[in-house]
Image (cartoon, rainbow, N blue to C red; front, side, top):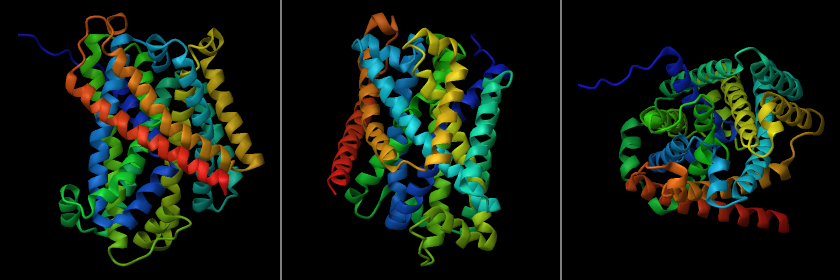
Length: 403
């Protein structure tokens, strides 16, 4: 009788590190705002969009994590094997998008510290950048990164769960609308937006690249990798469900959210005067973890372009954080860059996931590994949906440009 090998303490830390690196990378300031806005708009029926997006996310995540693990290569290297030069193009898009979003993450952290202590947002942003840099400069920085992202992720989940309980949402109606929504066709755009926000751009590669760096490759690691991928999406899903229910409990009473800061008004209405400070804590945790995830994953895409980026990976990460922090601190939030990043983000996943699906059938990349057909079907659905998201992003960018 063959017994499954026990997971060691180091592997357990790596497992949760990869899970929370991916999950917290997707739980940024935009995540909080999107969920609040869509919940106010669609009420309990938004539960259907959350459920659908989680299913699609699992399809995308499993395909990418398993194929990368079997090949032992990062996303850009697999893309280059499928079509020479494709990986380098994808890497540049991801770095540009990750860099622009990192400026937004730093800004979000600054706003969070402003909500907690009343500090100038630039002070909070600078402090966030400094802390993120320390994470990568200390000895055993990767282990520290794992612990920090786990701690911040758990903190966000616990606080949001408390707010949900205080807001007392209509749980029964939410459960019903998760499978029987009102006007389901109107939820297409929210579903696309959620998918792009949770597995778009660099996010879906965050945990996979962490596992590859730690040597969790080959078919013998597939169970471990699949578990990490599923738990990463489910962790993100738990946070989104908790936030959705917290918002639903507030708006179900007839309260109107502040259009300038919808998620903050949820916490303030549910918790009273201290709500803004509590929201600030969640925003700082979300932004800081996203800064770490964005910098780490974006830098990992440069490692194959030139030996310098591989040999000086930590230096590249630090420069990435420093430059994005300095731009926000001294120049301000570059709105145009963030909009461009959104457009890139919508186009990156269908290209990379499409390349992964092709790679899963090439023996020179995956050897004798046979990728399950149901995963390919799931992946194909995710490609179609995210391709639509990319086209919509470009159309929105064109409309804005023509104003």
